[in-house]
Structure formats: C-alpha cells, structure tokens
Amino acid sequence: MDFLHRIGAISKRELGIFAHRPLFLFCMIIAPVVCIIFFTTLMGNGLPTGLPTGLVDEDNTHITRILYRIVDSFQETKIVARYPNFAEARHAMQEGKIYAFFYIPKNTTVKALNNKQPKVSFYTNEAYYVPGTLLMKDLRTGSELTGLALTRETLYAKGANERTALGIIRPIVIEGHPLNNPILNYSVYLTNILLPGILILLILITTTYTIGLEWKLKTQKKWFSMANYSVTTALTGKLLPQTLLFSVIIIFYDVYLYKFLQFPCHCGILMMIAIGVLTVLASQSFGIFLFGLFSGFMRLAMCLCCLWGILSFSLAGFTYPVTGMDPVLRVLAYLFPLRHYYLIYVNQALDGYPIGYVWSSVVALLLFMCLPFLVVHRFHIAFDRYNYIP
Image 1 (cartoon, rainbow, N blue to C red):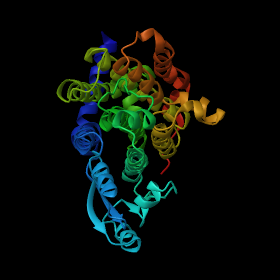
Image 2: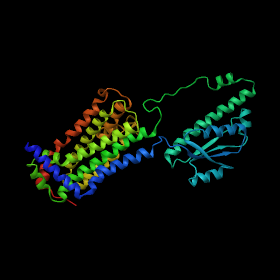
Image 3: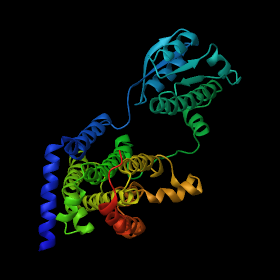
Image 4: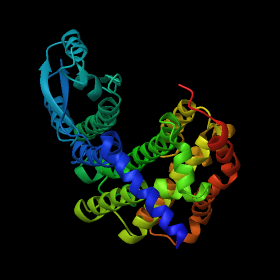
C-alpha cells in the first residue's frame, strides 16, 4: 500500500505541474485531437478529386472529342480549360492554374487511320507530387484508351463489326479486386499510420521533457525522496497521468475512425484499443530509455526523440517497403515502435488474421517496455550527481 500511496502522491504532484504549465495539456490533449480532426477532414473524400487539368486539341475531330470526354470522366481529373496551343497550356501550368494538360497535335486522327502511329502527349507538374502522380495515372489511362479508340475506328473502316473489333482490341478482360481497402480511400491508407506516428512523436518528446524538467527546476531530489528513493516508483508516479491521458486519446482515435468514420477494422475496436495502449506504453518506455542514456543532457535526449519520431515515418514501411531498403535501414526499421504498430494494424484491422502471425511485433513492443530497466542505474547516478546543463 505504501508503494501505491507514493505513486498517487507523485501523480497528484504531476497534475499540479500540468495545471501551471498549459504546454503539457496542449501536447497531450489539444495537439492530438486537432491532428485527428485535421487529417480526417483533409482527406474526408479519400483521394483528391476534380484536379484542374487542361487540354490542347489541335486536331478537333470526333475521335479527339471522345478522348476529351474519356479524360474528363475520371474522378480525379477535371478539364477546366482548353488551350489553342502548347505554349499557352505550359504557361497556365507554370502559373499553377492547372496541374497537367493533354496535348493532341494536328492530323492525329488521319495518321491513325492511315496506320502512321501518331503521338499524343501529356504533361504533369511533379512539383505537386500527389496531384501530379494522380493525374499522370489518369492521363496515361486516357492515352491508352485513345489508342484503342483509334484502333477500333480503323477496324470499323476495314469492315469489322463491333464484336470482332472488341475481340482484337481487348482479347482478355481484366478484373481488379482491391483487397482490404476496396474503395481505394486515400485516408484509410495514410491516416491510420500518420496519426499514431504523430502521437508517438508527442509521447517521446513529452516523456523526456517531463522528466528533464525536474533537473531544470532543481526539484529532482524532492521528487526522488517522495518515491522513497526508488526509480521505478518515481517514474511510474510521474508518467501515470500521461499514460492515462494518451490512452484516452487512443480510445477517442479508435472510436472516431472505426465507429464514426467506418474505417476497415476486421479485428474489433477493443483489439485496436489494446494495441494502441501497448504502443503508448512502449513509446513512453523508449523515451525513458533515451533520457536515461543521456540523463545529463536533457536537450540531447529530446533532440534524439524528435529525430527518432520523425524518422519513423520513413522507416515504418507504409510509404516505402522495408524489404526494398538498404540492409542497414532494414534492420534499423525494427527499432521504431511505429514499425511494429503498422505491422500489427495491417494484420489485425485490414487483414483480420490471427494475432499469432505478428507475434514478433507484439514481443518487440513488450521488449520496448522493458528498456527502462536497463538504465535504472543511470537514473540513480543522475539523481545523486547530475545537474541541469542548459
């Protein structure tokens, strides 16, 4: 009971510090909630739609007008202007009025009907990576459909009927069946990892700053005496309020995404909450470990936490496959809590497989929780000897 009493007293003291320093509440409550609302509303419609595109049609035949209707029918593409020549379209794209344009030179239809292989071109502005990439996909598809349309007209001119022409143009019908994200919602792809990544970053920074603040204010000895000179009691009591607050944020995040927004979740919301709380504890433990390694240098510990949290977005594997990385980075990726959260999320929420398929990631998060025990002696030394170094 004395152990629990001391933890309660330290936690009550910690809440008093929160009350006098609104920055803590901002990092633990306001910032995560704002990020959740911001990212889910930013990509509320999934993929960006109606991206402004231009068309230069110097041929102006019924075939090219069919192409215009094909390209404009894509969900991500919206032809907002037609330009008389290439120079004006390029100038409009440089001014940011359009993200891409399709160029059809003169005599395209005549050359196609005479089997002279005319060329049509499309240009995208890759300075805007997302719209440029999406429009490149649509315009490439449109150009391929144009070639098929011209081939069909040639076959019709040679006397082929519709059945024969379609059999030559498309001898094999391809069906696409996207798994786990069948509606191709961009938000499902990004939000489910960006938000936990931001939360892990905030947890790392808040953990190291909260502990280091005791040395900065020269109150570490008072804090240590309240814990009866036990590092475990001191850290547990101090970080317990943060654990509860971040756990509440995780619950809000899961309920909002999987119940309100109806994101795919084949494992049930309770499993995702459990995974989220486990990730919170692993992230806090990793922050304690980093502070213990550099306990005499609070700023160095915080900078390393920031670096670790930011690098996790690149090395988690959701933007670039870990299997395609350099062998050194491939090994380094498993030192980030976000990497293991991502693997468990895909296995549980998207695939709905048994948790045994990702047992190694679960064990990895549990090992992260054990890291503070490796630096207990460093904290003893820090409490006795170290002073804050500005």
